[in-house]
Image (cartoon, rainbow, N blue to C red; front, side):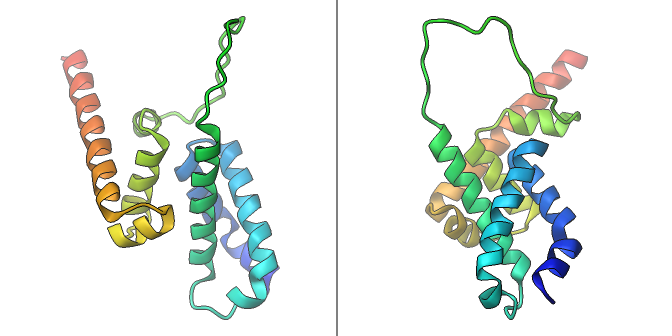
Length: 156
């Protein structure tokens, strides 16, 4: 399989994975584009491996973490914005709940439940310890449970 065939065959799946990681279709497209650029440079090494898509997904996850780390810095200003700006967000209760989590917690849940990776694999991809993976997953699930209980009370 050559690079173009791989992109045609797996491009949509990679875009969906990027969307699950970022929660934003624009960021997902950027993430896929960056990962495919890196894959193109390494295609001669990766094409003969068993799982070139796994390589791309790992690159996407690490890139997402890198963007998150770089963007964590706050830019404080004395002037508030004139009006609120909201990017269109995907609808659905699960996405609203996932967006309420920190990026690290959301990434851990995506890798664990969407990608079905073990704690050791997640720790390796994210560059954190297995204990941190477990604690982030636990905190994320606790947050989701609390949100679900609050919504249930509001509906009752």
